[in-house]
Structures are given as structure tokens and as C-alpha cells.
Image (cartoon, rainbow, N blue to C red; front, side):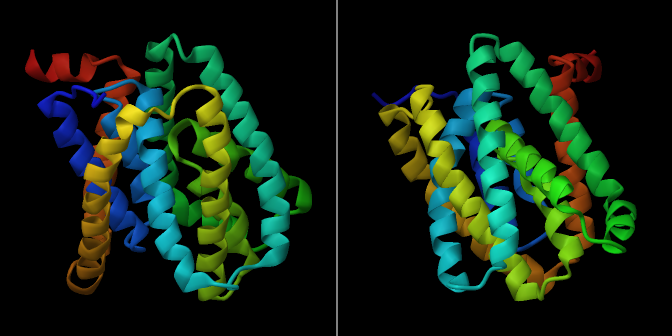
Length: 260
């Protein structure tokens, strides 16, 4: 049965998936993180994450065509096993909190706010990291963190980047490694999502409707790359994400405050 979504959901979902497509085009760093928090304003966090996972995999399938055999094998051998541990931990948290969406919303809101803080301080953080390559133990920890964040909110990008960037890989290999890493991570996430009953046939039509929007976002991202200032576009999106995170974190208090 096709879920009965509100008009607010469709506005949030189309906006979120459009931005996700823009992010997947290589425009901006981590813009796609806004998708789950934005949709979670209108439906449960678990449903929002489950709805986005097939869309992410479809886009990943298109991306890996451009990176056949282009990746850093040692990095993947370190990150992927540890990411599986993180995915398992994320699934356990999902299972423990699945009946308490309010806690999941606040946790997602906190992740969103911290993500924006990370992006604001990214130059400083990355500047400190680029001087030395993370050791194996740090890489394993970041892999676990990436798998955990990706499972809860498709937000595994920052930890993976914090490991990969200091490796000083050629640009194509860096991009290819990230693409292959998250493609495999997203495929693995199908297992716990399915076991937790998050993947529902009723959402299939919704996914089919939203997938072309993601593709449109990819083309829009390519256009924006060529014609607009990426810095200011990113700032607008991160401000939007920060406010969305506060909305989730405060349980809607932000809206009540604005509306008086």
C-alpha cells in the first residue's frame, strides 16, 4: 500500500533529495547530510533513513561506473571492516530506540548541529591533520564512526574524509575510494535495515518518484559547479541544516519561538 504522506512531507522530501543529488555531483562537501534531518521533520527518523537508502544506492551505482578500478586498496581494507562494526553498533542503537522517535530526533538534531560545526572548523581541523597521516588505530576508530553515522543518518562522510584526506591521494583516487567505500557501506546497510523491518514495499513507489529528483539534482549540481560560487551556496545549505538540526534537537521549540 502506498503511504499517505502530507504535502509538507513531499516539500521536504523533494528539497532534501534535490540537495542530495547536488551533493552527489561533487558540488560542496557533505551537503547530502541535510537529507535525513530535513525529511525527519515530517516522518520518523527511521523511516526517513530507510526511504533514502535505496536512492543513495541507485545514485552510487551510477557513480562507480566512473571509478572502475580507481581506489586506494589499503584505505578500503582498513576502513570497510571497521565500518561494518560501526554499522552493527548503529543497527543496535536503531533497534533500541525504534519505539522512541523523540530521542532519535534529538540525536539526529545533535548530529546535524555538530556536522555544521565540523564544516565551519574544517579548514583548521584538516590543516592540523594534513601534517601527518592517521595511524592504523585512528583509522579503525574513524571507520567505526563512519559506519555508525552512516547507519543512523547517512552521515558517515566526515570521519571517512578525516582519514582519507591526510593520505594525500591523487584527486581521482581519493574520489574513487570515497565512492566505493560508501557504495559498499550502503549495500551492507540493507542487511540491518531489512532485519529491523525498515525496508517496506509500500515505500517503493515513493522511492521511484523521488529518484528522478535526485538525478535532476546531479545535473543541477553540475550546472552550479560551472556557474555559481560554491562557497556561498554551501553557506546557505549549512545554515539551513543548522536550523533544521536545532528544530530536531529542541523538539520544535525553535518554530514555536519564531512564531511566538
